[in-house]
Amino acid sequence: MTKRNLHNTIIKETSFKIIKLVSFCMLCMSCTNNKDHIKQIKDYESLQEDRASDVTILYSEKALVKANLFASEFVRNENARPPFTELRKKVRVFFYDDQKKIKSTLYAKYARMYEHNKNVIIRDSIVVINQKGEQLKTEELVWNEQLRKFFTNKPVQIKTAAQMIYGNGLEANEDFSYYQITQIKGIVNLTNNSEL
Image (cartoon, rainbow, N blue to C red):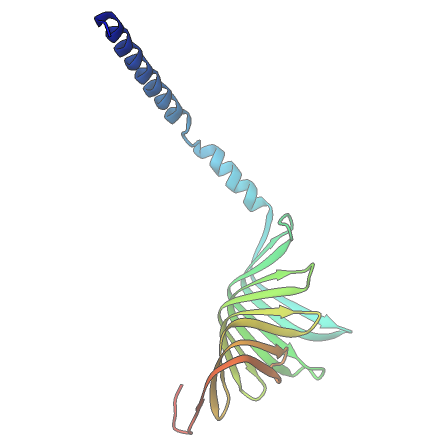
């Protein structure tokens, strides 16, 4: 290779590197975020939601109140697909019988309701207590309004007057008077002196 050819090759390689560097710099400068644009998008998304605090909802059937639901935060999103309602922070539900007596009580930190399929997904620190004082603890439940049943495939703990039952998965009716654990992991008999 002659000196002249070597010189031309070095110039071409150097020119190519300079063009790549300039292109990269221009690309980096064009990728900046416009804070006003981001705020507009966020504001638009929040406009799609209906929000309320300390909400109480009464569910009735044939003029009888069947449930009383309370949530610290209520967020309704009609534009989501499918539309949903979120209940946040503190969720309490009281289920009533026909004589307006509480059949069961549910406590949780979060729930999401889907009206199109009548399902409610309940999560985080769930406690359900029935009329007999039996207590269910789990981290996730699905409530199906049409079937009037709770379902989960997560670990569950049930405390009765005499036993503590541990397992995975559960099916229960709305007043928690009937429940079936899918896979029992263990049973601990409780004495009158035990504290849980």
